[in-house]
Image 1: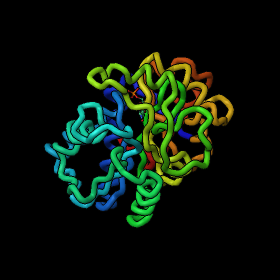
Image 2 (image 1 turned 135 degrees about the horizontal axis):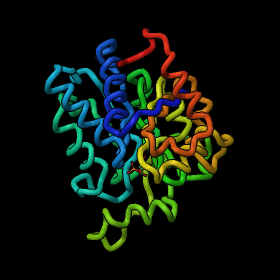
Image 3 (image 1 turned 60 degrees about the horizontal axis):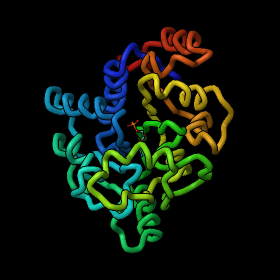
Image 4 (image 1 turned 180 degrees about the vertical axis):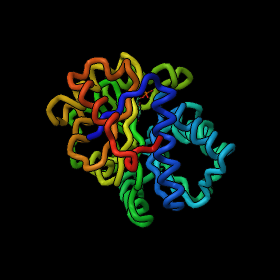
Length: 261
Ligand code: GLP
C-alpha cells in the first residue's frame, strides 16, 4: 500500500489522472474500473482536459463501473449510468460498446452478475481500478461485514449509506435499498488500484483503512493485501495518519523512474 499525500484534492486528482494517462499511452486498450461519488469528479475533469487538450485517446479503452442502484432507471439523475454519462462519457471518446455499468433494471440479477464478471475476464481483467471510500469504509457498495472474497452481487445498503443518499432520491417514494456491486474479491483482482479520499470527514476512516487491522468491518482495509494499491489523499483526509511523515519521505525519495510527475 502506497500512501501519497498531496496538498489539496486538485493536485491529488491531477496525479491520479497522470497515472491513468500514462497507462493508456503504454496500453491503449487499458481496462479501467470506474467509481462514482463526489470524490472522482475532479479526476474525471482532468481526464477530459487531457483528452481535449493533449489528445489522450480513449478509443480502445474499456470501462467497468463498480456499482449501480437496483430499480433505478438509467435516465434517473441519481443513477450511476446518468452520472457517468454526464461526468465522463459524454466528453471523451470511449465507444458505447466498451462501457459497462451493472444494470440495476436487470430481470435476472444473479445471472447479470455472472455475466458482468465474465465480461471483465473476456477483456483480460481490470488494469486500473479507481475507488472512493464510504464514510463507513465501504468500497463500491460492499458495506461493512461484506465477505472480503465476495464477487459481483446484490447488496442491501446500510443505514448510513441510505441516509447519505436520501438527498438524491427525493422524487422517489421508495429510495433504493439495494445495489449491484462488484465484490471485494473482484476489486482485488485489478492489477493496480487508485483509491482517492478527500476532506476531514474521511480522516477517521482513512486512518482505519491504512493503519488499522484488516477487517470485513472496514472493507477498504483489505487493500493492505493488494500488491499495487495507491491511496491518494489530501492533507485533510490524511490528518489522522500516525506515519504520515514516513509516507511523505517514501514519496519524496522515490526513484525518478517510479514517478509520474
Ligand atoms: C457511494 C459509492 C462509492 C463511493 C462512496 C463515497 O457509496 N458507491 O463508490 O466511494 O459513495 O462517495 P463520495 O465520494 O461522494 O464521498
